[in-house]
Length: 408
Image 1: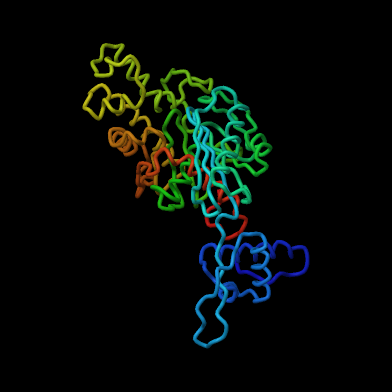
Image 2: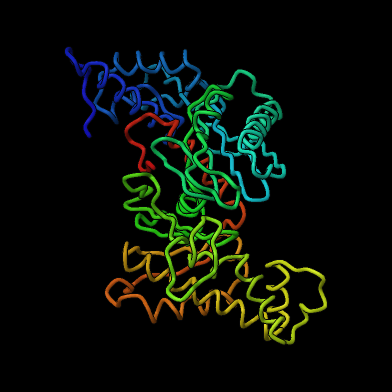
């Protein structure tokens, strides 16, 4: 889009905002810069640039940092401008099945403060009040009382309607039809944007992790539950109702395991962290021999540790779950034809014991044309992916200028 001088008429305010946004983007991405260099880069008239810059300085978004180098032709040195990253704050909140993490970032996305608490179970109101309290405490930790809270990204392990900001169903939290956006917006007096964990992790991995800014990416999020985040041309694919990505609740023929969502046979029941534990216990009950039998209780990490130590039962259990995750990944590849599949969530940390059977299952089940050139990589960000995704989503929504490359 070519910048234009503001015109009279109905579109005057729109074009004025576009020009303001363009100037802000140039300062943010290319600073330090002078007013004259902005005018040359945008073809805007110098008086227009000066008026916009003065407005941005008054709003605290841009600041003058002193004179630059004098041009060869002489004249007064230009006054250089830079973006004031501490002029605004964004919040990322990951409400996990066990822990709630709140991170505060500045207007450039740099993390300033972080706080973490156990997630209250089965009480959405208490959990969201905790988020708000942790946000206020983290902002106090950041010691930036004059900074503006520009946006909040809230991420949950369940089905969310992005358009309404409602958590429709989060079985591992015990939530149903919770107006997350409205509650947090009232508590924090800021715009709130709600996503599921897979979508947030996909954004984070795409911008800062394994995704390398690949435009068409699918992230298979395997942890306590199972979901996916899909990026199409760098944008989160939400679906018409905002619930895209709930691959874990597709039914697997022959599976009779009850799911926390209320249905029976969901893929999540046989391809998740709890599925690993259930499969290991069943194998032990059937007479299997394993070092796990010496433990009074065990979790997914214990099974993974036993597998790494060469425990045959644990290796077999993890391989079977990896195979089922590979089936899920093949569905994503066949349906969306991504250039890259990232495996995220807690199970990605298991490594090749899980990923090798996953890749083998993909090779068996994905269509050859869709599979051509697709890479499958583990998460780089690990447990930070969800909260970093929440921060990055909040940052993207807080940026009103039209030149944002990635917009979820």
